[in-house]
Image 1 (cartoon, one colour):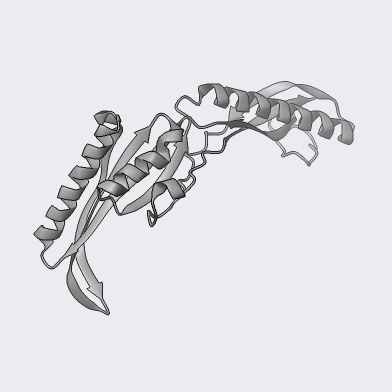
Image 2: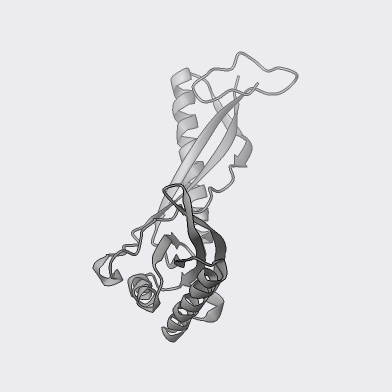
Length: 216
């Protein structure tokens, strides 16, 4: 009979041995080594084609500035291109075109400088900055190990409190790793050097579900 931590088995059912099920959680702090910056250009014009051309010209200037800063072309990726009617007070006032590129930076200390160069070249919005870990395998392993240890501690405390004998591990299941860290959004309203960009640390968390056999 399976039961969640905090409840007590009444006996085995259907031949399955009684087990104690706990969920352990482990977290590891790690410094990010990669930043992904979304840089965009938005323009309005009475004509859709003119708005799109203005955005294309400016974005090409931005890309040239990024390449001149030493960023490899393969680390610059177009992520959005759109054109739509622009409205003011319920009336259409031409068209608005937008184009965005995502820039992957292997040195987080260069984020502010890269944004500054992009803004100087014509970018008029910074839609997101995401800090990541390029190779999270070691941190994931450490978080999993911490989660297993946490589950073992919980099981020992629960079994002792309930006056039951804790047996060996019956089953272990690791929950899927959480998704990517959500980006920090900011608008490029001032020069980038006036805006501190601090990567801080990322928390990698893993959870495991462990079932322990119970003694009689």
